[in-house]
Length: 161
Image (cartoon, rainbow, N blue to C red):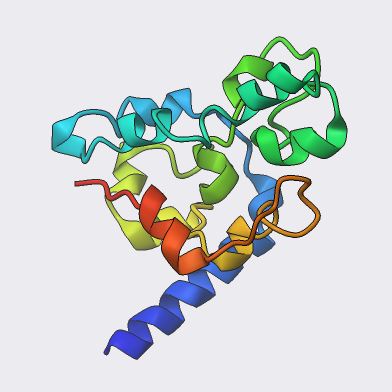
C-alpha cells in the first residue's frame, strides 16, 4: 500500500511540474495566513527564522542584489513570474520563499485545495526532493561546502497541522 501511495505521489509531482508553467507566483505572504501559529505547526515562523528567508539580505551585504547569477538562488522565481529587478512587487519574492520549493501557488493556495494533499499536488504544489534543493545547493555556488540532503532537509522540515 505504501508503494502505491509513493508511486501515485511521484506521478502527481511529475504531472504538476509538467504543467507548472500554467501557475503564477503569489509570494510567501499569501502562505502566511494559513501557516502561522502553534495550531498550524509554526511553519511560517520556522521559515521566517531560517537562512532561506534571509537569502536576499546576504546579497545586499555583498553588493550583489542585482547580479542575475545570484538572484536565481537568493530570490523566489527570479524572472519566472516572481522576483524581477526593480519590479514594484519584488519585495514579495525576496529570499528563498515557499514557492521556491513548493512551486507557484496560484492554484493550490486556497484552503479548500490545501486540505486535500492530492488535490494540492494536482493544483501545482510541488513536493520538494533532493533535486529541488540541488538546483542551488551545488558546486556552481561560490559558497558551496557540500550538501547532504538527508541532514539539511531535517533542518527545514515543517508540517502543517
